[in-house]
Image (tube, rainbow, N blue to C red; front, side, top):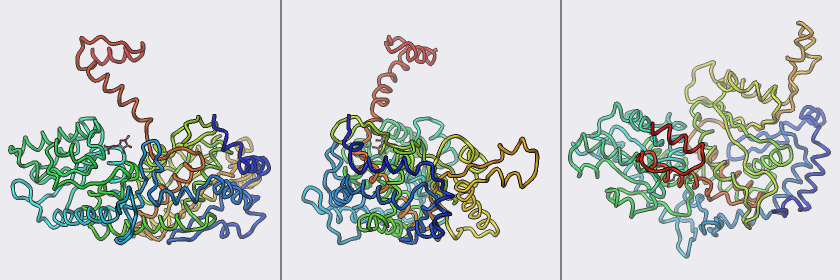
Length: 537
Ligand code: F6P
């Protein structure tokens, strides 16, 4: 059992403090401090981060920062940025921050400055993207490429598809983008149903280039292309790879000239700013892509240098710990009031849950406290007409991140005012609710009054930016990446491995031949055996 965290002075101080303030309401906190709404606020990098509607006091924050210090957050953060092998279970450095380091920076891994390597790949991506965008890259029959199909899964899909959707406004509309991830024939079939192979480029995105789903889809894509194009030499014009595994890329038949590399110090779910972003760069162009990287880098620097009490990812991460470990919350909702961010919650699910879903500490002991929270969400206002009821009047406490922008990318008055009014109103309603007296004043049958009361006291953060630009998207993604890191440090777990996804993969490999060969004897548990039998019939 790991007790170092829960036996620590700073944890015990938080426990005591929690006992004292757990019944204090957000409403009372606002009544006691008329400036709360502008004092529990950080304005940095063009982000207005309002964390006043949380069940915290100044003392809570002080104690949370003390806990962060006592867990060595600052030195661990520096260890990550400077390339130490903090992914101890895989003996790897963790340097997604190097992917957006400006030219000329020096970041050493095993005695080598990796920044020039990063920029060499970025330049190669830019050159290729320009060729696709200006039509000078010709397909096998001499036609320019019109369609780009990214084949990948997990971090090799969720980042690219989220970024493509988020930055669609900036994308070249003459190009069509499709994303295939699932090992379900329907995903591939629907993605290519209206495409011609001689105008289509497949980007096979896989860090390992061995992932079952991706390699199965890549093989079927090759067969689909060959059926139309006939000639195996056509593959070179229609398939490129993004990977760390050159050997497997060559084995698949992709020319290493057409491979865009990255490195083992980039985790899959942290690879959106690596070459995994190739489809994003083709869509929005190298200049916009570099703006996105600039946003990532600005947030990296903010996280690295800002004092803890002004540090957005630190505050977010510590609020996560506060709710998770003291209030016992189980889920965290993320509601972007920006339709282009519709895939952002899905992207965050892998980032947060694959990173923080661990119950073994770095020392190999079982945690005796809860770790990773369930992240979920949908764009506002759609969620309001779906699941917000449970957040307002249900029995669970669900902290929320609201994300909104002052300017819409598509100015269709009065939409933006309506949208943002709803975002602000939801935070207000959740925090302050509606009392029995207020309900009574409205009139109506007395027996319905209890149903109309809103208890309030439901916490939320508001993130407000000027508009959804590539740079701001970079900032937002890096902000969540680093808040995950903060939580990982407090819980003493490794946010950079994902061993929990292995067992299911291995068992599937055992079951595949059992489904394909009905004569094979099967020896699982009675439920698994029966499911296999049912499929076989
Ligand atoms: O789901 C496990 C995982 O390893 C993720 O971490 C990763 O993003 C995904 O599979 C895809 O892996 P690859 O890029 O190697 O195909």
